[in-house]
Image (cartoon, rainbow, N blue to C red; front, side, top):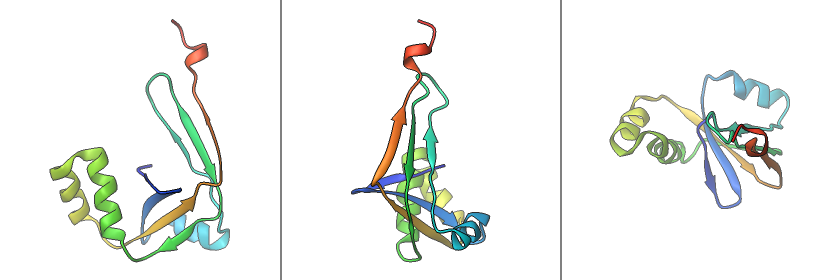
Length: 105
């Protein structure tokens, strides 16, 4: 899951036709887990009630995509995407951990 932190919130762009939006409509809570797939395999879990926004989607998507892909590829990625929604999750409760203590030395 690609994301960004803005102030005291985590933001994710969700495509307008993504099933996640239907799940959020039925139960407006989420707890994303963000993890690294390389040692020390750090994770963070954030819980809360998100808000959904239809304004600022392109700017949020561009900011997030260029973080992961770099400037030129991030711009191309953003231009190729359709409508979306920004999920904004205030960080009021969270948990972080890593596996450094149990990994082979």
